[in-house]
Amino acid sequence: MIEFEKGSTNVYADLGFPDAEEMFRKAQLTNEIDKIIKTRRWSRRKAAEVVGIPQPELSAMLRGHFRGIGEMKLLDCLARLGRDIQITIDPARRRTTPGQVNVVFR
Image 1 (cartoon, one colour):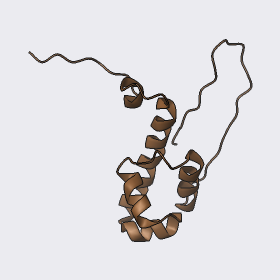
Image 2 (tube, one colour):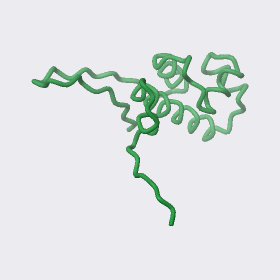
Image 3 (cartoon, helix red, strand yellow):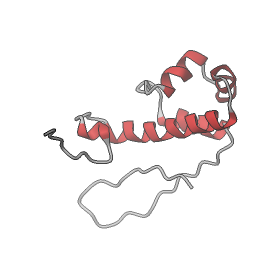
């Protein structure tokens, strides 16, 4: 019988990465960029021209190597691909824990 442990929704947290939340958001944003490129049937070279990053960096990013790429750059890529980006800051609530940063696609 194979034993397994049920993970959370964040594989980076499950693996113990110290920046797990940021890495998860980057993965979500990168996944959306990849979906748009595939839907449009663009080559990586065409996509790189549109998003404004070198093709090798785009290819690496789409393979999950996005540690050196900031979240704002990923948001900029999505905007260049025609997506509207809206950042909403909710008012503070009485709590003892830090607030959360989430990515929501409509």
